[in-house]
Image: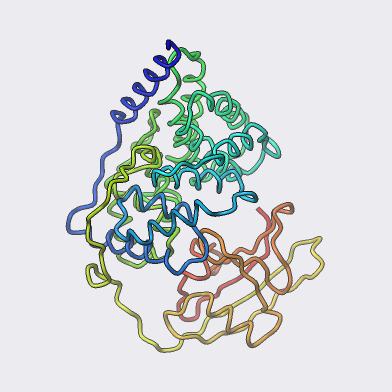
Length: 417
């Protein structure tokens, strides 16, 4: 009985701390709300025609308050029935959180995830920090399920991150911040004080790193990493020395939405919780009562002005200059496509005209990813991939979303990270 009472007190204290923690306040002005409704409708409608059940989209739908209940039910059932045998820790964690946000029991997925993390070790202490993204999601999902059993796993993970010399990218740092904040807020009563000090030390290190990526415009890293960073900076108990203007970031994101930057469902899923004043820490508190809100339609919100249908010319180069790779090449052609076409259309036209430009794609949660060009494929073990650049600037949108302009020089460069 005493143990049960202690657990109840721990949960009550954690819930109170989570609900009363200080958050940086910023809101979407009422006049701008139709733009937010518009991208939410776009994201939810993508579920019906998608063969890839994306847990990030379900989390965003439930945190924001789903409007398209058919899409919400379909995605929930698809994730419940999905085969998780080959999922990474990060993908499994998102599935657990998605089902939790739909008030569904994730079942043995939690124990499978816990086992993965008990056996987890980084490839090296100098591993690129983005490799901590998935394990951070796993710690967050496990923390929300049972912080007491997650504590030793999270402590070992935190010590590994503190020992790492690799800088964090914004996405990985933001998710690690959310996971560590969850643990910091839900340390069981009676646990050693050293746990809180450990999590606080690492949180301070990470949020300071994230704060260095805040641009003058308010964007954090790039426009697509800003959503997760907003979540992290709004809830962390350790504040960075550099002050963050949340409302400035919000206003800049809204301007980017008006320019049509958020058309990919995954990019919307990353930014939508922050636009609704929510974070991944709110997943366990989602209410699953029926939502009577009317679903926005295409006529309910503004759309970017359509472009004309005249042709443009895009200069397209494919290049592989990596030593040790059998086939080296650097080939360029000019491709004519309709103005407003996405980059994928340029690739398809180049492939039609020249077999050297043959390419293959893989469907990911972010949409289509170019996995191979001219029979040269990226390899995780070799840390190689196809990077797309405009001039010398890496593209931050995928080939199915980026819209090239007339006379733009696009390069697909086989490179290492």
